[in-house]
Image 1 (spheres, one colour):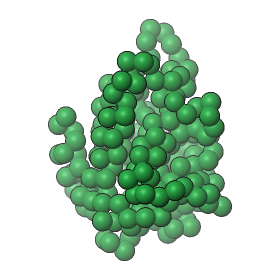
Image 2: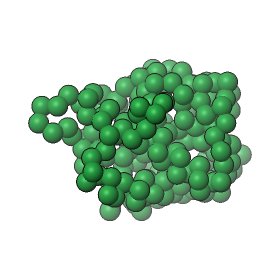
Image 3: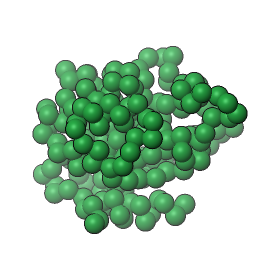
Length: 197
């Protein structure tokens, strides 16, 4: 069943996942923050601290009313702030879009879906547990698998490689484009636009 864009009066909560602080800024795990920053630039907004434990911008994106948010907590406990934003802004879980890194996709691949498992992603696991549902939208940015026997937990907390950084700005831009398409056109139309690439 296609997921249509919500009615104009229903806000969307668009969340970029990452870890706060300068130590984590360029980590693979922080791609959600980086895409949220790109969307903030496009909106022309500045993140403001919200009592719910996230930095937020209330704006219009793709013709829709959105709350763009970056939880200020560590990735593993993102669920608390996300649930707080859901309650505060009265956003139904199906109007939640989470942007995050994905180990099971090749680097730079962008995929969108509704629901499904967490694939070992602790940020998603925390959100699912806090909301009591997996039925929310995800924009997944592929970071690839770790080389050799490297622990995935170490890999996601490492900075992007020099090779990855060459195209990273373009990849972030494309991920922001995909998120805007998801907001404006709904899941199926956004998938048709970006999954073929």
